[in-house]
View 1: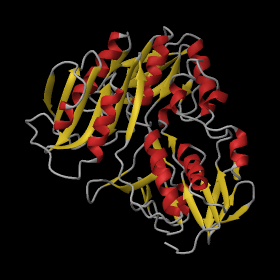
View 2 (view 1 turned 180 degrees about the vertical axis):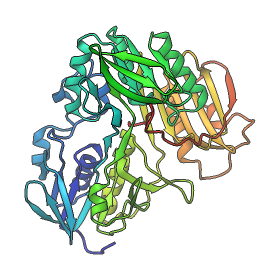
View 3 (view 1 turned 45 degrees about the vertical axis):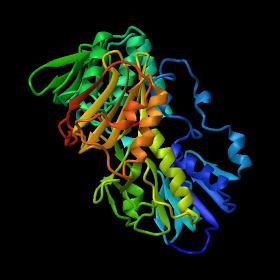
Length: 433
């Protein structure tokens, strides 16, 4: 990394990662020129309410703003919305408005684009939900009364399904995997969420491989490989995101399923960093890289990378965490369940009043809680301590669970390692919180 202090820092991307990085730089005392540039026409805003409070009309777009406009001005952050970064060359950022911005450090927080299905292109009433501009058309279709077909049973798809059902709309969810939330939760909890949706009248079909979507008789008809079909007035494609690596790739940076960065967030060019959904960073498991699509992770990672851009050089190791609201139930999730072999649950799983810890060979790797925010924080702390020393064998209750508030029996579930790959040609999704 260059040793001289930067005089100009440019941040590309006005989502939570980019906005957090810019705010953190000022909080940490960076006094140079600071630009925050993004192609979204709206000032930075909170995305999680898009599928819930905004879609249901409980919040307005103005209430989602991350900061008042005056905050960016007071902090002397040059906020350029509706401006696309088009190129990086020799320490200069080129923009769609014709401007060229010389920089000493550059942060790419470009996030991702909603995955689209080729057979769904060009049809009216087919939606994705990635940004503020996607909400009005989807809400208008829901206000028309539905029915709604959701392709993909990840967090986003299920949240929209729950929002639509709360308005009495007929909802069908199609998922290519055997269960919903296959990348977000261990199997016993996936099945609990599936029962929750079905108990509220949402039809959820799993193991569906779609082959087509076409208008017919005033409706949209989705057809599966096995001959089944479903029709609806509106369709939401909720199949996750594609990391937006286009700018980085054109600049010659190392990319894969994201922009390749080290533990400090630096890319293959030491002047260029990446954070948030687009960053492919070292995992806590040696030799593995991970890209996380979660709101809180993007915020935490961006703050850490921003500090490293101005000399902190502290590796980012925090376990990712997220939450979801569905039918009045709040689930909080932390860590990764890919390698988990045991899930220990304290409380009532089916009644969504529990705290659970997933372990791999006795070491905590993931945590989930419903209705127990205090217990969840204790479980998060256990994950952050996971590398500090030995933990008990998997046939004993992890000690952290003994300290949680009482609330029902403790049970253990044997888990098989989850090693699934995306099937983006079918109904499926990835967590995007």
